[in-house]
Image (cartoon, rainbow over all chains, first blue to last red):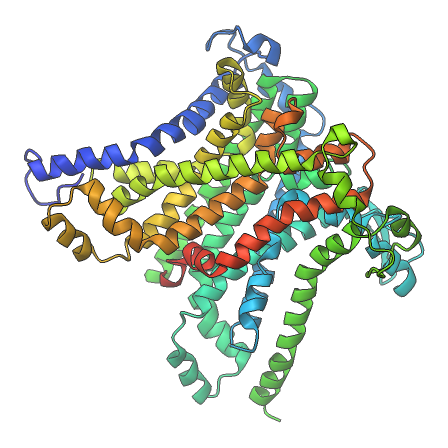
Amino acid sequence: MSTSPGVTRRRPSPMQRSQNRAGLAFVSPTLLVVLVIVVVPIAWTVLLAFQHARLIDLQGMGLFGNWTWGNFDQVFTAPGFWTSLWTTLVYTVGGTVGSILLGLVAALALRRPFRGRGVVRSTMLLPYVAPVVAVTFVWETALNPQTGVINNWGMHLFGWHRPIAFLSTSSYKADLLGVHVHLPMALMTVVAFEIWRYFPFAFLFLLARLQAVPAGIEEAATVDGATQSQRFRYILLPQLMPVIALLSVLRFIMTFNKFDDIYLLTGGNSGTEVVSVRVYNFLTASYDVGAAAAQALLLAAILMVLLGIYFGFFAKRVQEEEA
Amino acid sequence: MSRAQFEDRLFGGLRYVVIALLLIATVFPFYYMVVLSFRPTGQLLLHPGSLWISVHDLTLSTYKTILEPTSKGGQGLLGMLRNSALVSLGTVVLTLAASVPGAWAISRLKFVGSRQISALFLAVYLFPATLLAVPLFVMFARIGLQGSLVGLAIVYIAQTVPVSIYMLKNYFTTIPVSVEEAAALDGCSRLQVLWRVVLPLAAPSLMATGLYVFMIAWNEFLFALLFLAATPSKWTVSLGLSQMNNAIEVPTTVLMAGSVVLTVPVIVLFYVAERFLTEGLTTGADKS
């Protein structure tokens, strides 16, 4: 409510009512677009998830009818759903943690002024602003086993025996210190792409926060004999923590729902089929709208649960710190 | 040498190594893209490891092939550029027109439901685009917006309005209220205050927001794929390039030329307005 607490309820003043009207009028264009393009479709997806629906029937179908749990049964029992969910989690956690860590390293390196820092800073944002179609093409081209520069250099300079098909090898046998391991090569490559493309986002926010840290605290710590690593651990990191927490949430949500990067790099093959790509494949390969809607809905629900856990944990920790 | 001195030297040196490595990692793919786009395909197959072009190998035929209309044997990227430009500019204008009043109302006016409404706008990003895709696909087919650039622009508006309101709102709160109050005392209505006082003051923020919206719309791929895949005459550059990659045998060097054409407008705009953009996005991040 807009009335302040403690004031007894009374009719809103004419001034207040006029503000109400103007406020609603000013947000109404936006509200309308968001309702029609976002809220209505989401509600409809929820309905579709509980109905038998194929794209051809949809034109003539009413909103309600044929309620069923069949779609969810089908989703849970279909081969590959759990694998796909696991892939999504690995991809999301890898991409989120990796991009924030690399962004942090970059922000620390660019913290103090040097000649050309402005240009370096904006250049580092290029992967984030460039079109996804263009950058996925370049990665594909550079990683191509026959004509790509990476494999060519790898064989000539680093002595690789065979070219590595980075984007189409689901399991790569490698010797690490004499131990045979199977690496999920394609998945690792798309995670690397994700880190490369989104570290600038973390870098931008972390650098802005770093530059707002008052110089005095650090100087005082230096006088007291704190080394660089100690100053980072005990002064900078606590100051950065709120931004890192916010970035983790943002990046987690975005990566969890990510579609185009993986679709363009691997098409979801070679062990990289995340749920959003799977939804798209259900939609375009079998026109099974009901099953696609059920999976999309599950994805959103899982994301909410994960965020709920995160915020529950985080709120608890904040309380403990305050206590 | 004390630990402090040791660390100072270590991190002082490491810093430049890190900067150099990061620069290589960010610039190399773009350099590679440009180099390949000027090389004949045969050269790429013969020397995949070479990273420069000798002058007599340099060719512009890749650009000719990608840009010329299909009737002349090209790939028709020029028409797609026009489609992309129309959709992106339309999205920018309409998104700003919708979000300026919205952001101002949320930052200045106390009205019932304002908090719920801003929460709703942020919730847009919680839902995967694939969740919206199915119903939108059907809705658009019914009202005849499928395969049209207008329909695509409407979806982009819904996707960009929330972030645009967020960026503008952060800026509006830094404008002193007293300026607006003075204008109101002089007899300006709310719309006049917004139009004559707030907008001129917010010009840098408008630029930043407009640029960000433009980049999102210009780079977008999924919705273009869903709504326009069946109508080649309406393809945007991103969609067109990805279709070329899938369907026909287009040489890599030609695709790289297309990627350069797709990337250059965004990068030019970005360097022109970089300062506004980074400030616009991170306003508030340094206050938390």
